[in-house]
Structure formats: structure tokens, C-alpha cells
Image (tube, helix red, strand yellow):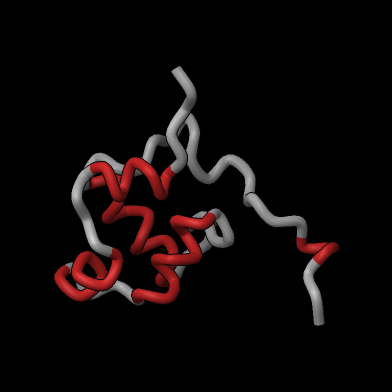
Length: 78
């Protein structure tokens, strides 16, 4: 069986990004970035808050998520 992405696991739990962020006092735009792999919560701040909440709700898997970011910073457009 293929490993589900963080975003897939989030959606399979029946969560909506907007409602989830609002109900848990999280930054909606940053939550999107975490789910897409552009932020991983390794530093203190709002992304770490998102990751901690995802852990509490059983979405974040420490063995899979946040090990590497899914984008290449050298290929970002200006």
C-alpha cells in the first residue's frame, strides 16, 4: 500500500483547512504550507504550533513527516 501524504491523512480525518485553523487558532496560510511540505515546524513559531496541533490530532507522523521539505530552495523563482 502506498504511503499517504500529510495532506491526504488530514483530509481523510474529515478536516477542512479553514475550519481546522480557525477552531485551533492557527494561521490558515501557514497550515497550508505545512500540509504541502513548505514548512516543517523545526523552528519556533507558528509553523511549529501547526505541527504540534497536527500531532495531537493524530495527523502528523514523526517517522514520515517533516524529515525533508518537499521543495528545493535553490529552484525558487524570484
